[in-house]
Image (tube, rainbow, N blue to C red; front, side, top):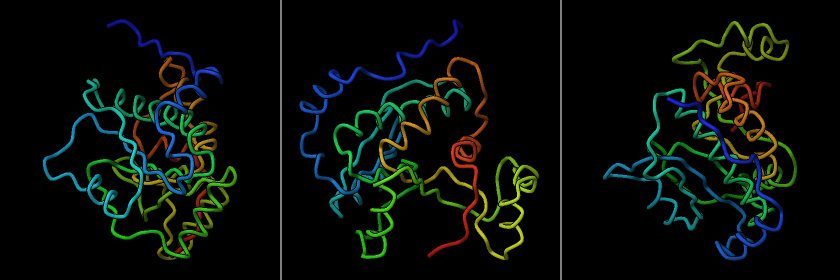
Length: 213
């Protein structure tokens, strides 16, 4: 099979501006946009209807694509998210973009005062909010985390969610482009390896954070 050759890493500014004007002009005022990747959808899909219930704009990538193997799927997913973020940076520069798993995620409430404050901080800079869990699976990243000063401090806190999980993460579109696009292009060119989605998430946001509510 011939090596995959990715398209250019970014569209030209004028092309993006034109696309933004034609594609989704209503997105300009969005405070939150949900972004997900799926090549197909289950019959009992919950993310779409639940996002609509709470009036969250939803961007769905990948429908109908054929991806070969887990490694390819992870590379394609992160590259697609990065490319979509490049467009969203022009469409909705002030929005917090929340990237979630398409099949096993649903929206259960709207934006509260506390989440609005948090998402505003995320959308107005280069901060990234990464979901976390208390362990890593199916690959164990504990030794890598233990080799980092901040990681050791996190592991020493009972109940701390030290391991990044790519099932949900949020950032401004600009921050997503900066974090994901260069790395995902390198992966697609065979210059690096992303073994799992959570491993990729750990690479893009390596510093653990304390548990928050």
